[in-house]
Image (cartoon, rainbow, N blue to C red; front, side):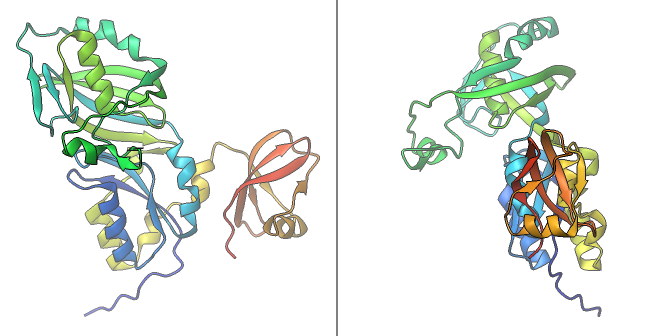
Length: 300
């Protein structure tokens, strides 16, 4: 029987296609155990009923989680009209059923533009947001509802894709902090029918898309076979939209010591910085020829 040694000093990003029924923390815990690595984090929570793109950050790549969480996300969501639940999706307790005449495609298309752009959204009670030191979903399970301050969100795209088994399928591109099930609920309110989210699949986030993702059983098989590096993305792949700069040996040393860099030739903006041997050192901001570190990624 083959003996596989634990993977050590692994660092990078694995793009997981999260299966339904799992929490994002379930994915992290299972990968942490399989890889024998302590530093593992995920980029953006998906509800258990949701599937799709979930980047998992390993080793020093966990330093990039905050950047991923702030990126725009894209989803395919099922919208089921005529129902209201306490969770705003089909997993919750039904609060109301509407048997009025069906809503047409034209009726839905007429209200969707109202939800484009910058707006305020009241988060659902069934969420992990803390208020008064307590998570809202824990209060909701006790039958307690409290006022929630609206949050600033931005929806850059909302498009009707199809209709399947009576549900409408919507493509939604939105900012961090947007609750898709709340958006579905609010669309239902605008139509005077009530609505819930019947399905959710994340298809894009930041620079990653669902066609880069791997099923969890495939990932476990790769770990077992010792070839997980074949699907491990380097952390700098998250920042591919920024131009790259190769530093000199002296500049690399200064950067690693936390000193400012003076590079007069650089225009103002954000850059990826590399050492002469190609090590990704940091994301930095250049302003008037002075470079400051936004986040470092070099190994000690």
